[in-house]
Length: 319
Length: 195
Image (cartoon, rainbow over all chains, first blue to last red; front, side, top):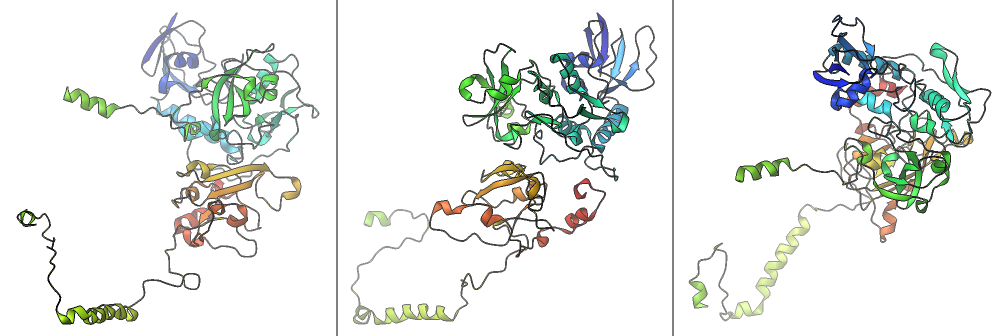
């Protein structure tokens, strides 16, 4: 066990834990945001640089600070390490710059994009970015390619996090897409316009932090905040069958995996569950999914729990 | 009666009703009728409080919030992209829409990849707060100085795109609704919004 201090919170974690995982064990505001890191996908992380933190003391043995900011999803903790995240102005400034870089080639077509409302990049730029852009040049654009009937691909929106590549590599037996070219020119693509046909290919939609890979049957059907997410399950021979179904009335608009509070899918689901079971009778509904009150999906829910602070304190005074 | 008059009145305006016998002149009623008619006739010569509506229109403020319009852009394409933010912001939940994907052959009709195939505002629900106008990221919906005409059936108050959409040949001017700051912002080409 090693001791690590993140933003003045000290925690003991096992050796080999990354700073990001240790911060998630503490929880709260001090967890660095992550776009490319996905806890269920091996080797993910280290691409987007949004999780950068400052290490002000390398370890108990060698207390020198690490001179540059490090990516917390790829840096393992050392005994006696002291990490600064939101307490360091340098980190806040760097994160703002990273958001600006990520948005340089992002088309900002949120009104059209189906991911709007549950988009990690939207949340990231809302929380850490600035509201204007200094980029005056033409944005990089790609020709859209058709990658099958189930997944809609928008190359312009891609931030090259590689999550879908790792998902395809680790969940399916034969990966048919990847990243072509290098540097600024790199793009997610299939080789020679091959369609992606695999039982677990739909998980690329769930792992994509932006709207680059979206549900094609659900395309433009409805906005996510008008739908009601419900936890549901069914017995499936291929996957766990634990999903979130997005209802409007009795109609199932789409099926997704269950995402945790960091936007990461807990159980990967198969394409049969995702695309074929579109009747609410196919599913055993467990109950409504809890959505953070800050999320736009929670709008008009009338389910916000109001904490009766004032009433309680008055009551205490009267007693 | 006698007992009541001893009571304390709250307002001092109550009058005790008397049943006294009218005089001869009073029983003719004519003086009272002429007196009443004089009051009525004198109103013929005062300034009227009403206007003859469709022919005469009362002046309204530049930012009057009346019937909505769905604007077209400079090339006559519909600006609305059915993002749903107006419906989300609407406190009266008066707006509904159904989105559709634009076909290659429809590029001259719709500005964005997605458009509103059905766009309905229930004018009975609408409270004319203008939140839809402020929420719109595409400058598609505006409230205008036009009034919603009266109807005889409730169903007629659900306005679709046939009523709301700006006619191509008769554009509706909403420039007065935009403050100098907004117009200056729109000209600023460094803003992503204007690219």
